Length: 89
Image 1 (cartoon, rainbow, N blue to C red):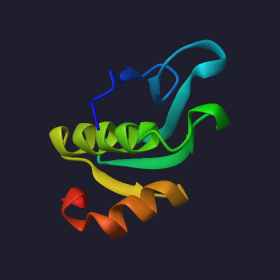
Image 2: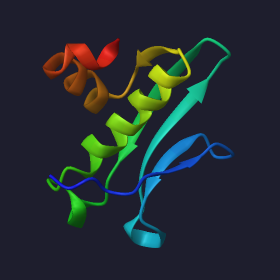
Image 3: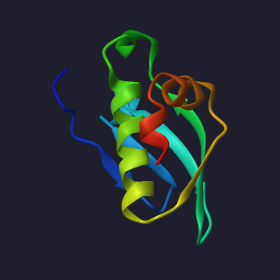
């Protein structure tokens, strides 16, 4: 899967791919020591292309870089971490 450019929109508390009606997002809530990954939303027409996975990977990389504890609330993030437990560290 090719890497898709992800934008980190700190003002809205989300990672984004695309724009307008084609925008996919992973919403989060951040504290000084943790990041709560709340909700992943990918438009129906764009599903099964790895976009959600790319958003999740970007959020986890951000958490790792900033030494934040990841709190997975979103079911998609929970599934990803079950399949890739090494990504949680």
